[in-house]
Amino acid sequence: MAMALMVQKYGGTSVGTIERIHRVADRVECACKDGHQVVVVLSAMSGETDRLLKLAHEMAPSPDERELDMLLSTGERVTIALLAMALRSRGVMARSFTGRQVGIHTDNSHTKARISRVTADRIKDALAERIVPVVAGFQGINERSDVTTLGRGGSDLTAVALAAALKADRCIIYTDVDGVYTADPNIVPSARKLEKISYEEMLEMASLGAKVLQSRSVEFAAKYAVPIEVNSSFKEGKGTLVTREDADMEGVMVSGVTGDRNQAKLTIVGVPDRPGIAAQIFGAVAEANIIVDMIIQNVSQASLTDISFTVPRADLRNAVDLVRRLAKEIEAKSVAVTESIAKVSVIGVGMRSHSGVAAKMFEVLSREGVNIMMITTSEIKISCVVDEKYLELAMRALHSALGLDRRSATPLA
Ligand code: ADP
Ligand code: ASP
Ligand code: MG
Image (cartoon, rainbow, N blue to C red; front, side, top):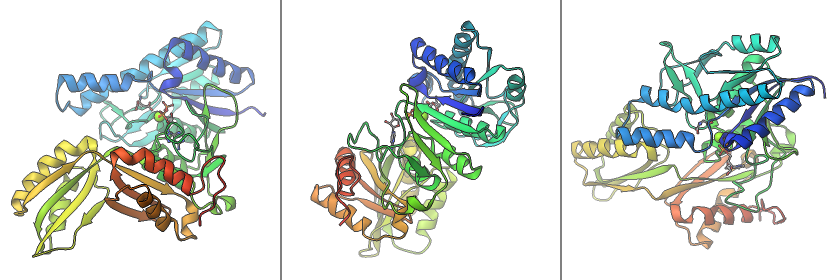
């Protein structure tokens, strides 16, 4: 293979122990020996970000977000320094860098900052000196030079943003699965590895619960046309290429099934049915920076209606406080909260030109006795909210009935 500039990102499991960091060093050394220029991006050791988050919440019920970022960004400092040591001890010149040192500039939204600009000067200098830069993923700095973090799974975004800024030939996301599958292989054992997938489908899959790639990293990759290769850091073999849609992708009706437990449902019961109420409720929710996913308003009876909607579980406490206050103001009867819901989705660009997927989905869920609480669709996906305890059953049943199982050849009737 010709000499290439490649960004290699390793996730938490891949750098979870000293032994595993040695294996990463082997892989980096190997690529260097093959004549490639390698830029490494690392996550924190697996479990570390969760551990830090827990500490913060033990210290304060709703910790200050600037301080939270200061804390969370430490996880990645540990792994980059350790890998640089491992590489140096085997004679590969390497140097670790924080997000700030490589110029990952972001906006001010702590814990979910957006990248505004990437300079990467120190990476270019290191490469020119034949030094392997080892960069902390998931972190940047805002205009005041305060540390920010890029949202959970944000090391993927660091890798893609650096690949774009450096015009790298390849951006490889090494993780604990050997590619993107038709469903999470840890939940659906019959899932198949996809050889390639379009940005658009990958973005839907990632936003609807497939955490193999962070959704914002996919959005960024699509915008700057960075092809992403997803592969295993534990074994050799071909992974999955995330790239522009091409003609053969359209022929596939459904390319994946996802599950998302990250939602909760609120119902405002007995809402007076008059114009302006929905605007009042959802205006206030949006102002509190809470992202509403699905909304259902029942047919009104006796001028009263029920409005249900879903919010991220992390925002539930704030949402409930806010909605209880609103309910009083608009003289609604009560507010009901359900945390144990989940969203199951099917995704595929082929749905644009084929009908029948939704009907099939509802039929399968009904056959399995799974009640559908809410439905949303877009051009290339259908999502249903169901009771959380049926999520895995629903995923497996849909995967099989839509003909995605590894051995199954059952076409969509
Ligand atoms: P890393 O720590 O390397 O960033 P993640 O845990 O963030 O890894 O992502 C990898 C995990 O994503 C896998 O272990 C798998 O359980 C999960 N996953 C969910 N959906 C999919 C899918 N469609 N294909 C592959 N993996 C998936
Ligand atoms: N360590 C961060 C997280 O756990 C970022 C990442 O792993 O990509 O979310
Ligand atoms: Mg990840």
